Amino acid sequence: DADVSAWTTEKEESTATRAKEHDDFVVEHQDYTASIDSVERAIESIEAGNKDVSLVQQKAVLNNVASLAKVPAAAKKIIMSFLQGSHNKLEADLLEVSAPQGKTFQSSSGGVLDMVKGMGEKMEDKREEVEKEEMNKKHAFDMIAQDLTDQIESNEQARSKKAAIKAQAADRKSVV
Image 1: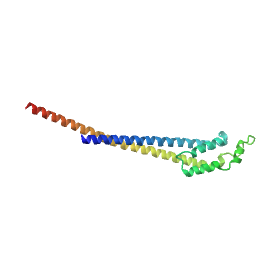
Image 2: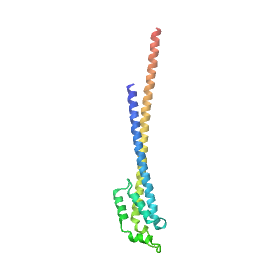
Image 3: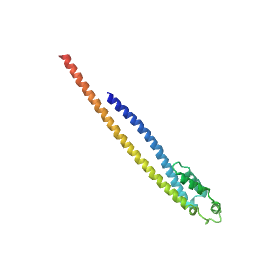
Image 4: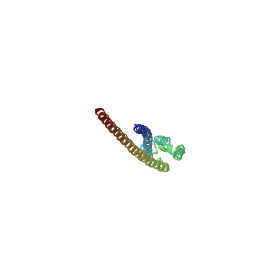
């Protein structure tokens, strides 16, 4: 009985710990997924240049990327520096209706584009790493839970068998 009680308690504690680990994983995975989506939108916006997306929209997308929790501090600094840079001439060229052939946002953002692409790849790698870690933790938990379940069932069967033998012995003594 003591062993069964200890194993049951251990299984309950393991289950609670695993549930917390899984909840943490879900939050982190959603954060990486949202960050990757934002980075992909930023890449599309930068690559679109002045063809489909306005400079204001491109800056807004880059500002959104810079505000993500998973973006390294150095990358945030570079993006913010880029956003605060002198683009007055560029903005004037893009906003001037009579001269649409002015400089494109793409030409002044190649370094930022490469950095954002690299960040996106790193975030995807990290998300895959988090997913693998979650699978390993789940597998380890499943193995422990199965082992504890087997031990509990085995002990309960042994206890039932002993109780049946004891009951048979008591019946024999009462007959004699």
